[in-house]
Each structure stands twice: as C-alpha cells, then as structure tokens.
Length: 203
Ligand code: AMP
Image (cartoon, rainbow, N blue to C red; front, side):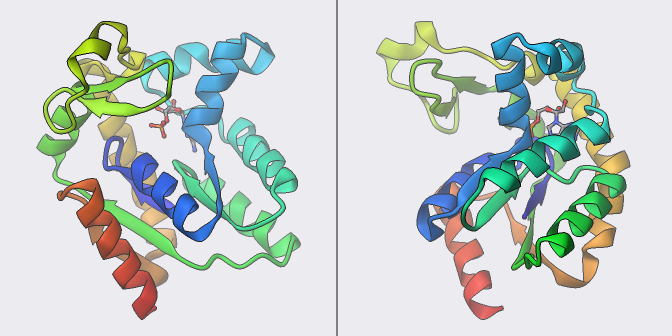
C-alpha cells in the first residue's frame, strides 16, 4: 500500500513496484478518471467531485477496489487508497475475508511547497499515458502541444486536495502507524524507488 499526498509520487512509485515485483497496480484515481472518460453511471456521479478535488464517497471507492481485487489473480500494489479511516477499515475486512496479507505500508513524504509545484507542472501525454513535469521531467518539444493537464492539477484545486489529504488521510496514517515505512519522497523517482526497495529488503 502506498500512502502520500497528491503529487508525492505514489503513482510513479506504484508503477515501478508493480513492474519490479510483477504486481497489479490498483489506482483508485486512475479507475475513477477512466470511469469519467467512459461516461457511464459511475463517471457521471463522480465527475464533478474529481474536478473539484473532493473525495468520492467511501462506498463507491471501496466497491471499485473490491472489484479490482476479485479480478486480480496475484499480488497487487494499491495507490491512492485508502484515503479515509472508513476506507481503511473496509480494506482490512476485505483482506481478512480473503486471507490476504498486507505486506507493506509505505508513506511517501514530501514538503507542501514541493507538492504544489509538482502538481501544477504535471502534464500527461494522452497517447501514451506517460506523465511529465514541465520543469522536473521535461517532455520532448515535439509532443508538448498534445500534452494535457489534469483538471484537478490547477493551483486552487491542488491546495484544496492537499487540505483534504491533511484532514482525512491523517487518520489513515494513524491507523497503520505501527507498520508504516516512511520514505523521503523529495528525490528523483529513481532515488525514491531505491529507498523503497532498501527499506522493503530490511523489513
Ligand atoms: P489521485 O489520482 O489518487 O490523485 O486521485 C484523483 C481524485 O480521485 C481524487 O482527488 C479524488 O477525487 C478521487 N479519489 C481517488 N482515490 C480516492 C479514494 N480512495 N477515495 C476518495 N476519492 C478518491
């Protein structure tokens, strides 16, 4: 499980972990954005919440994760979930019912000011899904015109998302406090990944 504020690098590190350990990457944010893009019932329920940076109701997110777990034949890394204490409690029950163990809870820590600039500079290539940063991971010049910014990466929404993170997710961090592996997320993706692997190896 990867915990951390918006733009702390959860998605990037989860993808690396999934690749390295051959795990499924379960990202509730990506599943919700996909639901909005698909234009179905769930998408229309959650579209505005995503735009505003508000959390989606617990039961909808828990259901999504439950579906993903049912379909997952092997281990998984969960990114962006749980974000509230109720989701964490729901997840604990889900795992217990399936006799699944939570091997590691990783918290990626990054200073507030860095999170804001990481979010507002983030750009996504709609053709490949690759995530760039205008300053920290610059895209090749020829693809810049086609890059997109997430609706919720504008500065006003980012500040709101960070406030929500602080309010709601503190309880989740507290819930897993005893087994939390805290990682300094301020370095490059490769540096952060090396730290995560080191700490996992020492567990
Ligand atoms: P993320 O990609 O993890 O930053 O998530 C993007 C947005 O999806 C969040 O700002 C929320 O609106 C929604 N979201 C993602 N995961 C959750 C969750 N576990 N609980 C509630 N809302 C979520």
